[in-house]
Length: 256
Image: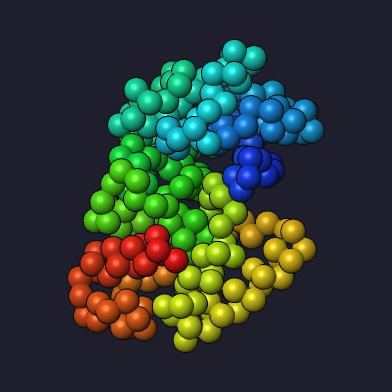
């Protein structure tokens, strides 16, 4: 089996668009639809035809191009069962633990409520890649617009069980700002310090900081590290339940 091909491109102000391609079966899926025009340009550049859309959640910068692209291509739209009513043009609904085949590639769906109540992520275990939408960012996580801290922490724990070499494709270029916040609560983490410097270098050259790996996120992302004694002390939750620590970290980031 040929590995899945991933084409990543910037769109809107800070979103990333993704096209994944199964060459053996001539299938191409857009991971969310932040901009129909940017996706069409990506398809043209690669010479691919759109056959699917995989939506992670309903926000306009993730599903806003659904209907335009479906009208133009006849593609099938997959999305979260828990939020199907808010996914424009949805054809197939998926939820926690469901697996479907994208050509020769199994795709496992995980419910990850927190950012929204119906958010899902797509994990391709045989390719060691995952598309995590706004659940997990490079050095961050999504704001809790609809869910609770407990829901989001439980969602993140699902992702943390994947192999460390899993490549994580998130939906926004937020890493530099996330790094600045992370350093305020765990400045003694040498891996974080080194990563922040590397991120600054990438952004100075206008290069992307995405994708990341789960191993790197677990070592540096404060939202995956509520058990860190340094973080617990910094946020005033020394020895507290991990959900409480996570909630405090999220609240501080919201004010940062």
